[in-house]
Length: 342
Image 1: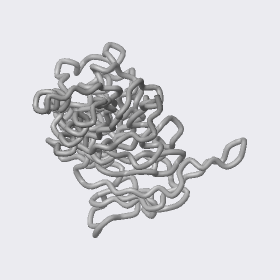
Image 2: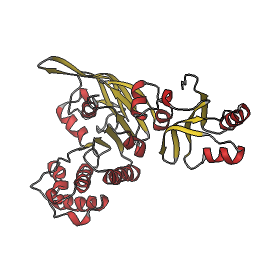
Image 3: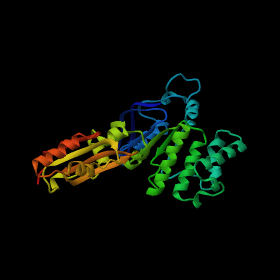
Image 4: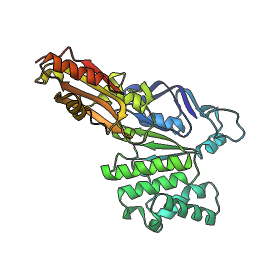
């Protein structure tokens, strides 16, 4: 378990003190894939570097359990000696946006590097590196150099290197931001597979909600150095509670005052199956046709989240029939849009 308690971080700049983090508190359970999301400058990378103390917090506690031999319960990393912190960091690996591979080393030797530092015998390190090349799907790249690899392949080697120390926590700092969409999905699938097979706790730092919805179980939203919202991905996607959350989940929004229709209702999808054809079923079961005026919905692990604006028929009986049908549906919330203007 990782727990941040009231973590703050300030930097001294030429223009004065910069408050990068302010009073951040969150809990990440063992085995979670936890997303921390926010716009550029929100403090995400600073926060993830505070988890392994690459950046030492100016205040607060970073409590992590199970990293120090013989310790009972969570230990505050900020209170550790230099030797204890080095021991703890062996269990917290990190992958980066720009891969950070050693260009003069082969892929095999890149993966061996952290084991060399830890004093692992050469033959044992080589065997472990070959196993990790299999794990990330690149067994034929042992003797290749990073310059010979694609971006996705470089990130796979970086993931293999991060796993070389048998970590308990994997920190991903914008790990897919430099990749194309197809490669991003393959890397996310790999991270998800590693999480399931090895039981790693994964912390994903990103500005892309698509990454969060793809693999994360819980998410926290950071804005201007403050944690403004946290919850399961389903909770945040179905009903964001803050303006920052709404901007990230529904970046386009829906301008209802520009829509040419009357009797407008908003339908919120709260996690039902993505494969249920609601509008088609309404037409078939009730014989009522509605206009889809706008929609911002998404599929998260086969479950539907988001909102849709519907224009109901002018006929009051038909409109009432449609409303009753929609309200009877499971995992759907319906409300009239009273502030609509033609």
